[in-house]
Length: 253
Image (tube, rainbow, N blue to C red; front, side, top):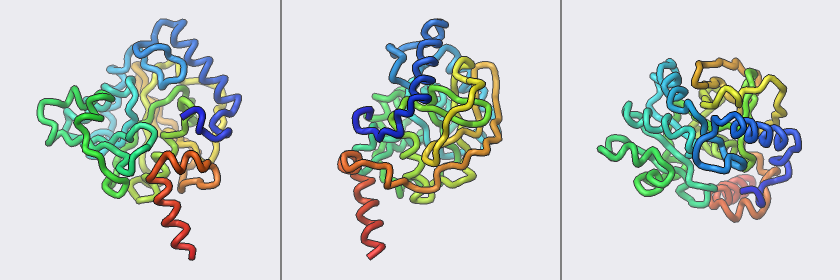
């Protein structure tokens, strides 16, 4: 969603950091398919080990319902969750449908769990649901381009992860205490500060192939949809947002 993204998504400092990380992963020969890495949540060597580290965390073991990003580096996370009997929700690309999430229920998928954990498989096998059908989400797994030990995060620049969290917050599926976890390569964990704004979703736990970082982040999670930051083109492209806006306007009258 690069063309329709508000200017705030393209803060020069964040874009520069993205480009540095994409280049670093490729030059370090730790980036994996799909290529090019630029413009994506980068896949990385060791993604499966990171997923294994995540799976021993108490937050993971308690979770029965996860919201997970659809990107390639988190495929191992989605597959492990499904194999452990957890229900996984993935957003419809670009939130273009009124039923803007896909529910992956391992009880219904049978032996097709590996297929369902892929982007194409989820689109074919997942059940489209509305935000109100999310229920209570126990754990959010986010894809990242870069993070730091304070819980600041940079995505690929589209802002969808932030919007998905805000949508889930609007219906009570998540709240300020919902744990947000990301899996990344160690090269994606930076020491520098990362600019954060109120719409950005911070991470509570960073998991790399080598281990776990608990950020104890001081950044607050988004508490609402920031309508003032959304363009008319975005609202037209995402029916769920347009419906919520109409309902919000009607409630004020």
